[in-house]
Length: 213
Ligand code: SAH
Image (cartoon, helix red, strand yellow):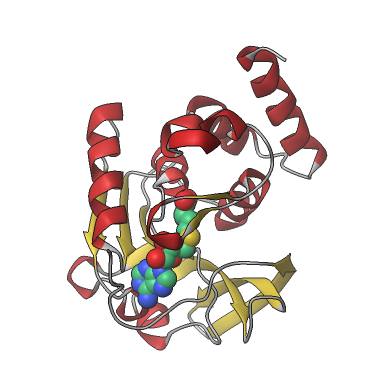
């Protein structure tokens, strides 16, 4: 397949996996996943599979990125927080839909590589920040939308506190690598509503900063 054919097949496979939101499909079409993958794996960018990135982490499977983005129901005026920058791909997708995106990772290498990429690609509404995402980003709170791309045992309470009333948080919840559920949390005036979306497999959310070699 030529790269153009690969991309067509990629978008078709997203549709067949239940991604129906046009704005999400357009965002997935605009952002080139290959730009977020370095070295030998770049030619597999349009396969629906997670791939290795720096600091021993992974770029998520594109159909999961699309599914989580769709569940987040991002609005054009939204300020969004992502925990787990990784390659920066999910943040770039969010930036197509939101006014402002903050993305936090615990690895300095990932944060600086992602920020350099955002600058090169002209994604000027994204800011990548080094930090422990379990604490959120109090200086920019509250957020309209929060997405975690690493699995928590429970939704971290600082993040729930930094979500605006009327806001949505999407995250994988689970005690291990293998048994996790994608959960959508709706914060209302009366409290929190939880909706389970599907099974998932993410790296765990780890407290503290990571050590790069
Ligand atoms: N969204 C990424 C994939 C993320 S992989 C992409 O689009 O490529 C999960 C990421 O979560 C890893 O980079 C890992 O370092 C990060 N992570 C895990 N625990 C964290 C924490 N407490 N704070 C911030 N980032 C964390």
